[in-house]
Amino acid sequence: MNNNQAIHRAVFFLFTTILHELLLGMGLANAQTYTGRVNVINNKPVYIQLNPNVMIMPGEEVTFKASGSVDVNHQHYEVRRCKYFGLKCWYEKRSVPNFREVNEFTIKVDLVASDGTVKSSTEKVTGGNDPFKLSYTADNNSFTSPAKINAYLIYPHQQMNRTPCKGRPRFCSQGEITISTNALAVDIEQRLNRLEEELTDNFANLDPVVVRSDLFIDPLLRDTDSKRKDVQKIFVEKLGLHADKKDYARKVVDIAKYARSLHKNKEQVTILNNYIFEAYVNLGDYKKIVNEGGNNLKTAKDSCENLPGTSKQCIEYSKMLRLNAIGWMEQKARYSSTEIRVALGLLESGVEVLEPGSMDTKQKCNVHKVACELLSAHYIDLARMLTILRTSPELEKAEEYLTSALKVQRFLN
Image (cartoon, rainbow, N blue to C red; front, side, top):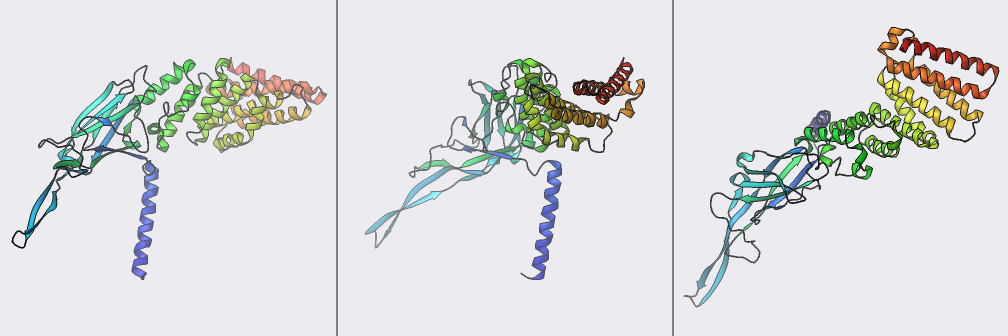
């Protein structure tokens, strides 16, 4: 390789690297493309599977593109050839292909529900490879009901012989048109709205197994980083309506763990972890809080790094410290000084994170009400745990914490 070639390759590598980084920044580089094939011999709509396998779900509008060419009305025939004054003759096989580009066809596409109902239909003249759209309207009974794609080609210029070309029929057609889409070409706004409704109004009927399946959070909804983050945010907001309810505790754990896997956003993951720990408290499953606390506390701490104590991230971190303290206190039938000391350390850290000095007046507590309420809860828990130790220094300290809790409560009232 000469120097010029080496330079050209280096420049090309640098260019592609920069381009990939730009695409990642825009959410384009990792967008999955889905393709299906429409065979020219189909004379009515037939099922077209998108690969990788993906379903069109209620509330999604998908923009497709068609590409490729097919051989229409291909002709087979034979020519008689002779030599030696016609004494020796034979037939030579000939054929005349008739390839036509996709922009010469009309493509008929239907979205068909499992009950056979056509949910959306388009008959698109694909001239110029223009994209075409299909919408699947979501209603109250169809959130987890996927629709399949049925399609076929119409050749408007002349009658099309759809006989397969196998066996050399006189006239036949062969080939496939490709239809494709990717996650960036899917409008999911209506489905996201329905997802919010499912997690709000229909939570009592939700089956966590269904929630974890592609029938609930389908691939098109979570195919790109930004969409996964948006979906996870909806879970964060709506699970908060049910996280403190004992009747839903097991369901909250299952669904929050699934939602946690959708994206690595530390703030959202921390909130989901707190839902899980709160549910563990309601279930009396304190040992799981202790076992799962370590890494989750680190994630919460990282989220709070360099932020004020009254920030949402630090409030969630402080809340997690308190929930872990409860886990350490309650994991055994009998309290031991070891568990109590660990719990005290967690609660003291929780107080420190909230920066009590920033909430030492009524005005500040009115502005930061959630943080003040949490600070008061920390003080009360610290006093309760110190009284269990029953030594004079601990009892004096418990009294100080109770006084601090009452002071914060006066600010709140």
